[in-house]
Amino acid sequence: MIKLELLLGVATFALWVFCLVDAIGAPADRIRNLPKVGWILLILFFPFVGSIAWLVAGRPDDAPRRRSPYERETPAYPEYDRPGRAAAVDPEKDEAFLRQVRERAEAQRRAYEAQRRRERQADGEAGE
Image (cartoon, rainbow, N blue to C red):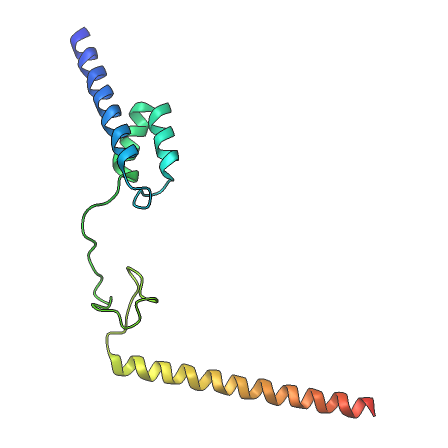
């Protein structure tokens, strides 16, 4: 019984040391879900639970990210393409949609300018 407790204690200590060293050595921009300092404090104050949490939810994911089926292979506008952002499947439909959006924006701009002109005319007539 004592040997089992000693073995579990040594295993927990080894896990704690591994996770603490791993958290300290991990690049801060790749750590998930919490800031680096938060993970280190969690591992220090709660050795077993913090270590398990680090392995499950905090450790940087080194596996290459898989693309979704609708994600662009080579982005046309890299400043707008973020991982996981969907892209049009059919470029012609995408262009038609963008054309429709531009036309609607132009119609809204013309309607706004016409309304402003009418308001200015109404203000001019009221001021006379």
